[in-house]
Image (tube, rainbow over all chains, first blue to last red; front, side, top):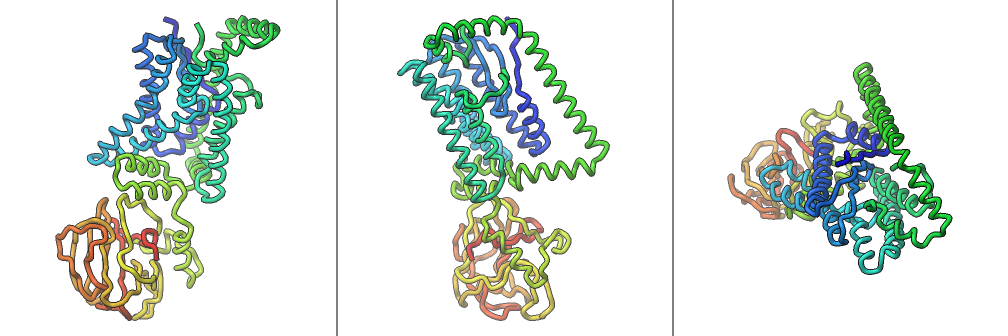
Length: 200
Length: 278
């Protein structure tokens, strides 16, 4: 078996550094733990379908796994859905544990937010992938590519506008605007409106 | 065998011109030779990050004051006082099904800070000295910042705010003293209701507070209701949010019928203004 190809963007290193410096250690730990369980969910189901893990890319949006095609759209959908599913199951488990241990609520919250965030229909998140698979299955991959690119652009633009409005109206952290803006930028790059060096 | 992320784009190539196909194939041929170069780029990025990290740690060790100053500034800029851990915990509590509305409110407070009107109150209380409260000029056991209580609560009585938390000239002695609670003016006999679920900790009477009742809540919080005409709850009794526990009066050192309401966390006095609607 060839070694797993690991890739990371320079922005990722900056992001990890910022989180490590700025966030409370217990929050950093909860985030890393939730992200790791998310990827393990993908990998476990991938193994179930006898797929091969080709690589891991670390981006500021989280880790992305790359794997060889495993045949059916159904199998691919199962692998994709496994990550958010693990997060939502963990959220429920930690929330139930919260009555005994107050710190569990932090983990429940992180898992909930991570799970739901990954279900957004914006490339490169799992939600978009699931939508792509559904569209490719019903309308064909060509239409799926087009619709998903448009959806990514529209949703990330809407999120950016919403985050900007919230920041303007209520103040608070600019973090949401940065996160939504990064997704929007990525969507623009995806359709070729913005050109940057290929990071892969 | 096609790659996960290019699965869709491969199909697109069926629609492109021969020239593009030629270029695409030439590109993919070139990629094979690029593999070691890409690896070394990854190594360089890792090295650069490690170097940056080492420099940061070095600065932190050599000039701790400077590092702390910049770290605090960066933290303030990025989080803008947002307590992300508290926000996530509040989301977690909402998922747990406990206090849905309260959890959403707590998440809001953690992200955006207290609502504008209530945030202005500590400043209003300082109008006589025209200086803002800081850690130095408030009593050590008084806490001005809003905390996330983690339980449901409601106004203890219907009335109007007559005196806020903070320094004021004492209405009877005349000298300036720190006021550790809120005064809510109301008619004698108006029902005082428990601020939240809890257990009645003490019922008593003192020359200063008059007839008072104290209720212990979750997470180390407690509330005190003073100057009552009558306390209807008894010590050790379990109370729910909104249960009647006493009636407004002017017992003790009071110049008129009102409720003196305090919020404690362990041994600290919190400003109750963030949790009431007066």
